[in-house]
Image 1: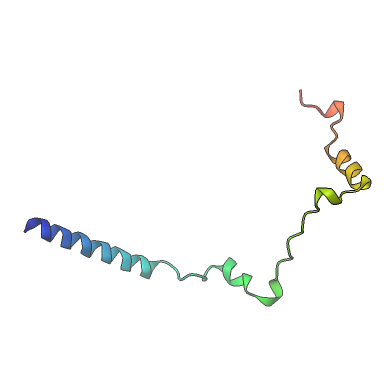
Image 2: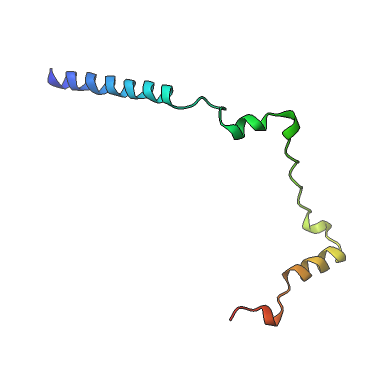
Length: 77
């Protein structure tokens, strides 16, 4: 009998805590960042599509080499 009462009390506390969470948490979509995302004037630019490595030409490869080239005086000591 006592175990039945403990289970009932535990279930009641669990339901009560769920109700309190529903009352205290803001509804979904109420954050400023989420609400601004739906504004028509604030559309984010589409993500840039990366160029396929097979489409690189000699100028692209030279530009990459210049970006990644390490000069001897730039090496960490």
